[in-house]
Length: 278
Figure (cartoon, rainbow, N blue to C red):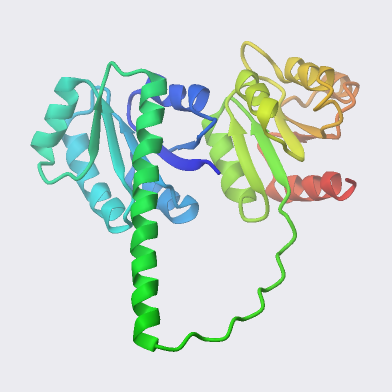
């Protein structure tokens, strides 16, 4: 199980490192620094930790974050601030009551990932101890152990979908829409997607056809060359509308294609059709 990390801040390079190098243990989701955007993410994805990657934020930016921090703290979500020494000092001066944990740059992605996981595991252990103590106290107070009840039948296993797109807003939109019915992982490029598929399984790949460096066709080729993934269903996401180009896409023997901007009803019916055949 991965920890869900909600990321914001001006440091795009630091945020990209989370997506690229920390995907083994952290499921990363990016949001803007707008109050409404952060509140919606807190409501719909329930992150395990909130990370603010500082880079040149103004005092007014940090003052506005004070309201966000109060809400995150109420939800008992730990806050991590990543920045250089001057940025971290500026933050504590403007928000002296902050309960955030600070990590100063320069810091390697590996060390930062390890520190975040260690912090969350420690919180998990403390929560378990507290829950056990509360349960023990409740049992003593009742003095009677209620009869064991039969466990309800387990719901059927949810299907898994991997979404690959270089546009983080598309990843956020699709994940938010699909997460109610499916387990969803995201990748910002083909390299991250193939790294995921080395150790994890999925039932369907939604693959952006037009990406920089390595396009969807190149990623599809790697999927088909690997004996473990060659039969994996792939549906392209594309903004291409020319008939000739679409024929070229279909010639790649995929399970379907969806045009951008994405029609949610269409993507839902396409996914049901593909997964229903497996």
